[in-house]
Length: 509
Image 1 (cartoon, rainbow, N blue to C red):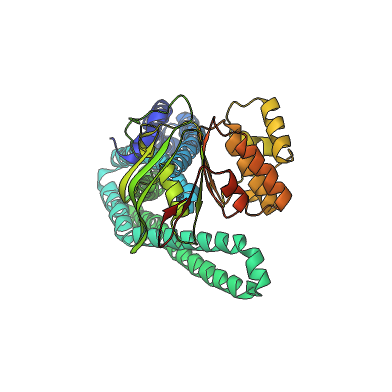
Image 2: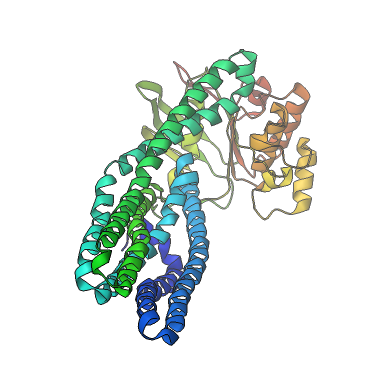
């Protein structure tokens, strides 16, 4: 019991054990109700004074079972909600740790399916006990009559399993189409301004509508298949009851009542058992799709106590079949400023990603201080990408990202860079202009007092005065921070210790 689903269940094992115990203890109540009903009917003709207590006992057994079942459902829904939340957090954590986007289907649906397995697990324990208790009650009422009824009732489970043969395939198809539609919808929403400008919104909506219709069709087919086990159980139960009543002239009323009640009460647990098997299989499959953070070795490097020296030796960068750069050799002194230049696709952003430890070089060696970038622990590195994320949080929170940075420091930095502290800037920061976004991203990078600062076209959207303001703020950190900038502004070149032009003939000057 060490699979993905069992690991999700582990923190809630006590709550689930309590629910399972209640399910096991109350599993005999429906059978007790059927036996009490048979005794009540028998007492009507022989001992009328006992009929009422026996009838009330049957009603009390069913009422108690219903009450405990309701409590167990509420209890398990709370556990399932906690499991779904944990699954979504695990998927998000894996995405953040590994740099891959968590699939929308995982965050929205697989987590829910995995969590619902807790209901199925308890049902798999309870329903066989219920069916066993009802079988005992039926046999006690009339062994001969119960044989025919129970044979018909027992056909429900194999019939349900036979009818489930396409359910798993259809469920996978629904999940795939749902994820494709969600990805297409999010893409179209994000590209809304571009689509409107090109007059292409109608075509985009038509593609989405067709994708949604396909997803709805797959879901409808899946829902039909999912209902087949319950239908099989109902038909088997109806057949058993019909057989009983055809044989009623040969049965006394108490026997008919006992066996009939047992069969009538058996169809629901039989259907629930078949559905629980299907749900439990879906839960395990869904839990297996929820990604887990990869175990990473402890960093073997360390940050120098001051700004590091950055050294590249014979570095090679490759993107697919293209060689972006080869035999790169240069050094940026501790606390110095280096400017990377070159045409688009020359490997400037790729080189920054290597220096940030996000990917290894395709050859050669890179050292930040005395360590390779990938060996360094999380620490005083700030990397501003061209289109970095802005969260729908207050501007102050976007600057600090949960780090313990004093309000006075945030206010001073905002004033230095011209960042207006205010409320949330909307999803992905869409309420900010390009210049406002870039000033905020630089402020976020400087707020952590970095020792290595990597800037990728960090002032390209700013007017001349704002760009100079940001550049001056960055240059004031020289000495305490080693700075490497991708920029095409000659004013950066004038302040740099080294300017490296990447391209067909990599050169330093």
